[in-house]
Image 1 (cartoon, rainbow, N blue to C red):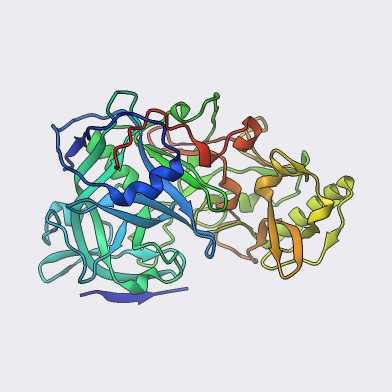
Image 2: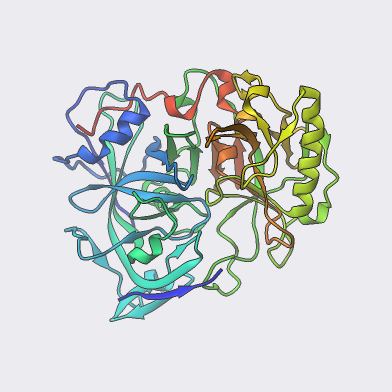
Length: 450
């Protein structure tokens, strides 16, 4: 039984299927996941150092992202909301949930006690899954079941990898409110030891690192687990720039965890530049303080980057001023955006509309994340209106986090979360090199989902 609250050792197996290696576009991989049938389980592998891949899609109505994987026995294609900051994966467990491999976690065991927030219900361990959009939680049953993901392997047969004791929480349908209609739960990618990437790393003795390549529009991207290398997936060399991950000392969760630090990902943005000109931002709000306020975090819960009001006003003023050199004149804005330009006035380039560049400067002046028009601007075409709008929104005053980098700014970029080295890696737009997340190179990924 679930109770609602609201507020504003692992064993991996490799499954080889008798198919020939072939080039598989990522969109094909995603569309064919639901047709998997598993016939053969091979021996355990204590260590796996090749990447695991999960397709990512974008929901056009919510602008949120979903991740596809396999759960249960027999394995079933499952689509989950992708959330970077969540600690615990959860899944709808209604009367239709059937799996021969699922089992509960007993109360008063070391495993149950290892969760920062837990309770007992009918002698079974219960947890508090959360919806990061509605900030709603509930108390529901903890469950262990099988998880499987395809691998990217250069051998003649690429396997699926099975983790037989993946831990997650059950949830009820109400917790899906605000998420894409095709998802049945949430994939937690936060810093927690119970998150999806952490459990994969522990099970496979692989690097505690994952990379995201978020797709634009209706295309398909990918999450890459258990590896720090992204070179497999691109025909040309793609380099990452790194900056340290910052630990926020205070968790921003519905259920408090007794001084538990945040499982969200924060980075040290020290300044923001537009066309090379630094905004005169109060530096104190760009630093996370001891109460957990301030700083910059990376989030897939926000479709567009959210700026605290004082930063947003400076950002808009500088951007509009620099855009005037491009002969651009502001037109009527379309919500939720504050600055828009007629589409016919902008020149198209390979990295999007020609507008002033935005640089997020990190721990040194030489380390910055450059954002071009394809990621700074959003095309709006509806009701006879055709405009490009500045894809940054005003988050209001006294926000908990000064800068929240949203999904749109990460699309067709590669971002990497390397927990072993406590660092965040990023590229600029892949479009600079004629690449994008929708056409990653899967030449050696076996067609293992016939």
